[in-house]
Every structure is written in structure tokens, then in C-alpha cells.
Length: 289
Image (cartoon, rainbow, N blue to C red):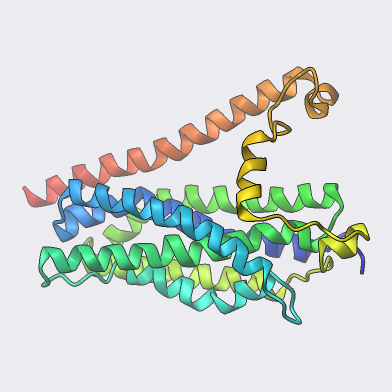
């Protein structure tokens, strides 16, 4: 077992491509409210309440997904198989969100919206996302290789989000601008996400089988209650310049530059869908008049 193996380019690429569900989730978050309110006619307050309740489910599913992946044992590894098993269901769940019945009652439409939205965000996206993140530790123990893998993931996630948010409205107008156009486009997005997850499975390999095998020591198991207590009493994650080696090793300018870069990226991610929304509303009002 090569815990510090130097990974091939294709393996790092697969890790990045497998982050496409993250891009799809960002695109859905940017446009779904508008689809529900403008195209389906649902009340904005009801949609907002649905999103709030869904986030509570999402928080619970994150914990359950982590436990599920940790207990997985297959010939392909622990996390990697979930990219294969959920590749097609994840793509389908993206498309199903937009196949909400047009002729149903508002109550039925809200139930459908809640179920399909959580099917993707709280189940499919959560499990595949945690599985992909786990591959960082399961493919190599070399921190340089992990950093390189993470950069591939960030590139595909941000690029997919920016491209998707920029092209969604133009493509919807190109396809006719109606509900059918939304269904076709997000069906295509679903196919792309499925292909990305399949690539993440077939082009990668788990070289680290367990923490015990890596360290040579038996890992002490703790209860859920003890884990919660450790979470709130552990202060190692606090960036204290007096004690944190990361800050002491790297120059102050590094952190200030990173804050600026993160701020710029965040602004771009907000500005692009914002401008697209303004253009969409302007064209929509123009066509109605």
C-alpha cells in the first residue's frame, strides 16, 4: 500500500471532474427560486420556508452520510464506490426537480418540490460530496498531492459554477424560454454530472485503505456524545498567530492576498447570476409587452 504515492494527472483530474455536482448545486441555488415563482407560480414565502426546512434535513443527512461511507467496505474502497452507485441517480434527481406537475394543486406542487429538492441536495449531493472529499485522504497521505488534488476540485467547481450561471439564461432563451426549456437544459446538466461522477470513479483509485494501516496504530473509537464534547473543547482550529504554525511559517501577505482573492471570487459568483437575472427579467417583460 503506497500511502504517499505520487498520483497521476488523470487521477487528480478525476477528483476535479467529480466536483461537478457542486457546480450543479450552485446553479440550482441561483435559479431555482425564480423557476418556482415565475414559471410555476409558487409563493416566494412558501419556497423560502421550504429551503429553510430543507437545510435542517441537510444538516442531519451530512452526519448520516459520513457514518454510511465510513462503514462501507468494498473491493473498490470506501468512498469511491458511491460515485459509481449514485452517478445516475444524482443526474436524474437534478432533472426531476424541474419536472414539477404544472396542472397540480399548489399543495401537491410544494410537496413535489420539497421531495425532489431534498432528493438531490440532502441525499445525492450530500453523499457524493462527502465521498469525493474523503478521497483526499484515501488516495494519498502526501500533503503536496492532496493540495494538488484540492486545486483541481476548486478549479472545476468554480469554473462549472461560473459557466453554468453565465450560460443558463441564454441557453433557456435559445431553447424557447418556457418550462420545457428548463427541463431540457437541466436534463443536460444532469447527464454532465453523471458523466463527471463516473469519470471520478473509473479514473481514480483508493491507495490508503484505513487510518489504522497508515499509522500502524489502532484508532480509539469515541461515542457521538464524546465527539460533540471534543468539537466544542478543541481549539486547534483557531488561527492564533502565537501558536498556529501555519501562520508562523507563511508571510502575513499570503493571508491578506487569500482574503482578497476569496472576496473577488465571491463577488463574481454573486455578480454573474445577478446580471443574468436582470437581463432575463428585462427580456421577459419585453416579450410580454
